[in-house]
Amino acid sequence: MTLDEVENELKSLVKKDNYREFSSSLNPTASPILGVRIPQLRTLAKKIAGDTWNKPGDKASWQIFLEQNPLTTFEHQALQAMVIGYARADINLILNYLKDFIPHIHDWAVNDILCQTFKTAQKHQETVWNFLMNYKDSRKEFEVRVVAIMLMTHFLNDAYIDRVLKVLNTLYTDTSRDSATYYAKMGIAWAVATAACKTKYPDLTYEFMKSPSNRLDSWTYNKAIRKMQESFRVTPEIKEKMNQLKK
Image (tube, rainbow, N blue to C red):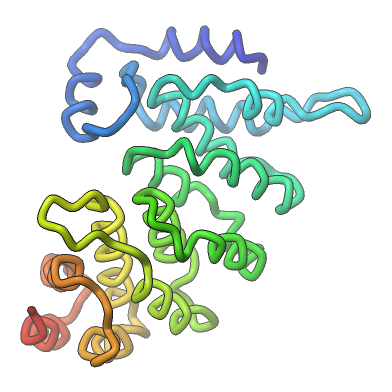
């Protein structure tokens, strides 16, 4: 698909209802929202990512889209995230597009759409892990959230769980009252709580939480425990033990 064709399809998918206003209220840091629903964006993104027509030696159509996408609205950014996730190509090529896109992320929804769609991480664990570690010392809110949500979504397994908890323990958060890293802190808390939800890892997560070397700031630490309390996947026994650890 050409960029003009994508633009025309986006316009046709905008509905005259209150969805745009509703979405904006849930995502205050997003770029202007047109009002296209996520399932429709996913259908369009799959069409773009699957369009591999090109002359020998030329770039595929999905590559041209990623390079020409203006990223001016939430929908354009969500499409960029989805196409990167759905694209089937050499992992290093895909990671180059991901690297170019990450600095443009400034809202939680685009961030999480990217991480949830990037299932190629499950096929290329070591390569994607090494890529993400380039951001583990970042002090930028959404670079930190990308790491946290990627680890939560694709690396809570036997091979990586210990490393995941270690990285979550060291990601940067601002501890000031008016935190400039709210969405990073929420992402870290969610990732820690999700580890406790996994059948194999509640005890390991408990040991992580009670360890003297735990470096999570108090807000993130307590938010992780609260998310565990709210989850039906965490046993009552673990919930009680975690509750006693609140700071």
